Length: 500
Image 1 (cartoon, rainbow, N blue to C red):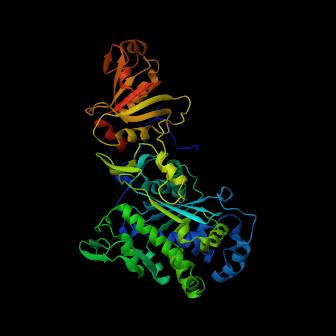
Image 2 (cartoon, one colour; image 1 turned 180 degrees about the vertical axis):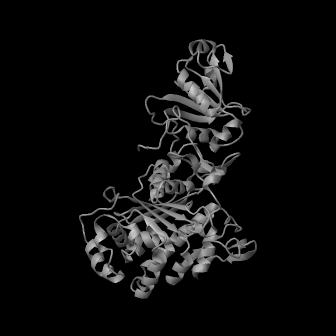
Image 3 (cartoon, rainbow, N blue to C red; image 1 turned 120 degrees about the vertical axis):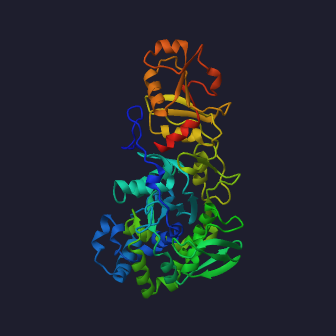
């Protein structure tokens, strides 16, 4: 996918703001509530075209209709039109990205603290839900490397609604799946929405206690929450607490456990919204509409919402496969800390996206998706230089982060791995070309702030590059792959790259 913001670093360095400039502490209210997405994406927002912001195309003539005239006339007309297909429907897979943000009045209002990639298969009524951790460290086109939750915020800086596009592009790149639709929700109406639905039924997997739940938003004092194993009916406040809890014992205090609880709530809201007691109650529909109309942004048109709503009742529990991308020992991710820089981050275990792509591809398969064989090569952009990157430090993930910083340029990273020794304080570039690509070498040196090791013959050939040290011959033994132009061994100083 072409990117008008992509800048070849050989011509111009990236201008990357620090994580602090993008990320402020997101209100805890924000984590939760992908449940609103279900109401909107699967059924709720067909209630009325009154939510004018989320419609486009050939349905704009409906804008002045009331809730129930819209329901009675447009619903019947649109739902039976067989000449229109949803995005992805012809290939039997409709992909929707659900995002939850803090919204107006919260610090970091547009940081997507909840991201769920959903796929629906019309032929089987199968639904796959894949929770993406907010700390996943990715390449964001035009902005360099950052945590994935910043993609929406970066896009919104460029213009209203552009966060949907940028977040979709990032998710497409790491999962190798097109994103047909995006639904972004802010969470201020969550508890009220649940109450208006009459509450939700949630089955708690295990008993857990959270001793550090804030008494109120920003409160310095805490209350003690306990959720008991078993199925129970929750009102809005209780469901909010269940989804927000982040310090529970028994393994319930992680972001990954919280993501699993969010998936439970999402499905519970779907079930409640589709029940006859809600859909056929005008008073409830009106209250729900008033609650959600100002809290949603999406690229779904009205007829697409209606068609999704038609499919929703066919999705049953046995057809749903849910997965949280996590850092478990056999999981596809691992965590590390890079300082100075973004601090705690999550990276793909094989330092590429192959496992995540395999999981997304097989999301409809119950159980664990097969693990892919790691890929080490990318498609180069001609003309290009081929490099191998090795981590010469004890800081996990630094080689992968460096590779991401080079992504989008004409550098083809053919392999990422570890150096034989872990004592490199300075990033070092070994020239394998004998000085024949001096211009590119000079640009790499400047971008990485690296030392250069060249063979004697290379220095003579490339008289405009001054090496840090010379070797009698090219140090081929340090490389683990053939036909590369440069071997880059990243040192401890490479951590500063994430700040640029």
